Amino acid sequence: MTIHSTQRSDDCIVFRDAAVTRGGRLIWQHGDFAIPQGSVTAIVGTNGTGKTTMMMAELGLVPLSHGSVTVLGKPAGAMNRQIGYVPQSYAADIDANLTAEQSVLLGLTGTRFGIRPVTKTQRQEAAQAMRFVGLEGKERYRLSEMSGGMRQRVAIAQALVCRPRLLMLDEPLANLDLASQHALVHVLARLNREYGMTIQMVAHDLNMLLPILTGAVYLLDGHPHYSAMNEVLDSDLLTHLYGTRVQVVTTPQGDMFVTPSPDQTGDAPVDTHTAAEVVAFHHHGAEAGAGRED
Ligand SMILES: Nc1ncnc2c1ncn2[C@@H]1O[C@H](COP(=O)(O)OP(=O)(O)OP(=O)(O)O)[C@@H](O)[C@H]1O
Ligand SMILES: [Mg+2]
Image (cartoon, rainbow, N blue to C red; front, side):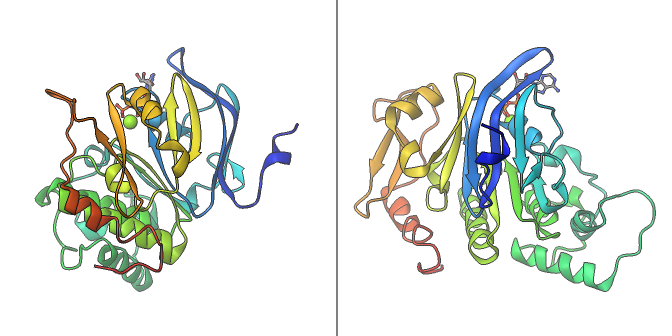
């Protein structure tokens, strides 16, 4: 078997017997799966299992110690211009003196060094990306004046502005309140549906994402696996994966979601959704394109 004989043209990300070593330590190995174009996938796994490392490998920023990663038909790194990336530490990486608009424009000009004239078209594209994430009117705010949630929208607008084919977000829901999480999921759903963008994100709480997820890569016992969503939602597997008791529940609509078991006690994270919220949320997204918008 050769690597390329198994690659299908509708695959977006293809791992073939991939392994990564960092600082002399094996992080994960035997990564052997393909993520389809147009999919919305989560990368799940406990802290330190190598989720961020996986995204960096896909961007060609961390070399594999074995195997291959192909992204958008080319070796990892070659297609980065068609990838939007929102890193886990986006808030720490940015220059807080920039305005929101300047920051978004970096996604087009690619550099903050030197003086580059910005074209009218670029400015319009930046405005459109900012509108998409709900930042209209905030163009002139400095990042230092914005809340964490607003900065995150700036980071997403910056990743979007070049109209990537693949959007990668590392823990985009962390530090967002419930309303902002809903808003972000809605934005991601639209990007996937209206622009056919392939989306991959690292996430710890799948509840919010279930209406749009088509699959998940789970990092378990040092091996990444990919499953379509109906296969990954297995209580025992998720319990093993999270290291804490997890339950899968079927709503009256037939949608499933993950919740800590009723016997969960103490300091474990608790699902904050009421049943009504979950049911309401599950109305849209599942039937992509056909559902109502709210
Ligand atoms: N620059 C580095 N050099 C050496 N080892 C590293 C480096 N960055 C990360 N690691 C190690 O690689 C492993 C995976 O790290 P990674 O950041 O990918 O985990 P993660 O799954 O994203 O964790 P988290 O949920 O905390 O974000 C960790 O054991 C970490 O210590
Ligand atoms: Mg990480």
